Length: 176
Image 1 (cartoon, rainbow, N blue to C red):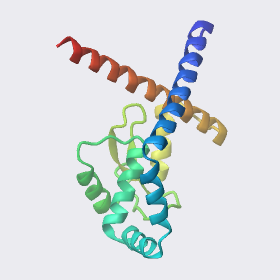
Image 2 (image 1 turned 180 degrees about the horizontal axis):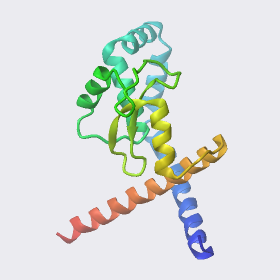
Image 3 (image 1 turned 180 degrees about the vertical axis):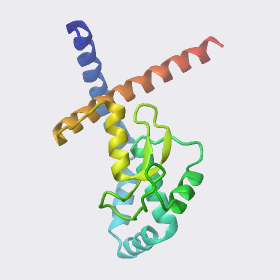
Image 4 (image 1 turned 135 degrees about the vertical axis):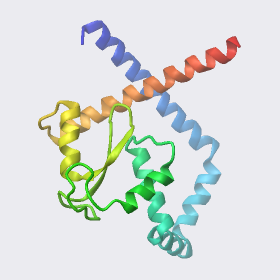
């Protein structure tokens, strides 16, 4: 990156951080009573029990899984169909190894998606997902700190693109 582009990027980054902080303050100011009410509700034992039951239910598991995918950047037209495919897939679509449920092991079930576009590709074992991800990014190995730094810049770039797209969409509406 040349110095002018780097300076512009750092300037935009600083503006974005200030905007996020202002937005956060305004949100808390405008929703203070509601937030306090929810915080008090979360301390209620009946509510805690109800939420624990929900999280253990099939609907709660489905909701948590789809939320995780969305936060991870997966884009889909039909998350319900994607979840059904997730539930019914028993073998890796790349190497045909039997998949296991859970959070550990090379054969754990993983949703593979393109990190640039967010598009779902297929359900594969963790081993195939890591290999494909490294091939996509041209990464051989990176430390946790490097990974976190790369994710931070990617999120900033995504926020900038979203704001740019919204700005131009708004301008097109004003013209029409």
